[in-house]
Image (cartoon, rainbow, N blue to C red):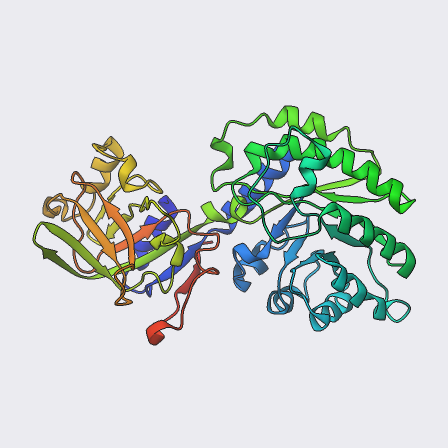
Length: 410
């Protein structure tokens, strides 16, 4: 955040908002920390953030490979050296053909996709595939698995058995299998999933009649996975129970990118309706759908950092939500509130709701408490932890509002 403040202080007037700001060095640090904690190969899930400029600059850090979910994503990384894993339950023949041509590893979701690969046998080199297993399989091989939310992805065990038989009959090489438990699930189920994975591997190798080479244990890492109580040392010890001929991998999108990105939007107007104070911004739900949290039953809106050229003022601890910062007035806050040549003009304090420009009542992207300085027109609001899904999982056509710009910090 200090780098963001320095950038705004030097170029605040020239930066176009709404925009995303990404830190390549933070991507590298996150990647190194997670690979060290896991002790396995780490695959980046591209759907979390597919910004081409960021990926180009960070590509040499992502040496575990990239998971691709569409032809559009594949086109963005087709010329790179990173190993590619194709994973989409709706992938059709056109997509599969492009995957084979790009020498990607295909993660097969269903028997129809598997049958579609038959036409490539003998025509083009086909990399050994992975079978995607539905989470229902985990409970079958580990009765103590806590279980996860049911989903539509991958194969149940009966289908897995059919897929293995079909691989043998069609002479489609099989590398291994792919597991996933859902977002934010790692700390809860990783150990139980690994235990199930060891048993699954033994049975798949028995049915296939040959050793496998690769197992993806999934991901589900949170934005700040380091802050969760999890014994990585014990987990690494458990993973050593997999046979030495198996390459183990995990995948991540949010755990790698979330803390490396920021969303900035400029306050256009402020207004008061009875006792409620609002800041109307030039960016909102159209450029950052996740900030609005319309998919959550209980919203915990984030508080932004506020910046003004003459005074850098913190509206909240970076990344906190309004409900968790009651009464906060840290020494760091005070220092930022009094920085700059016009520090005596600090705004009155008070609660404020930050809204976007889409003309939708759901376009509410942030909130601050009574003890924070109120924003003024021209202030830039900076939201932390917006590097994953915030830009890629966002609607843009409504009202033909502009897409967010992108700036690479380093």
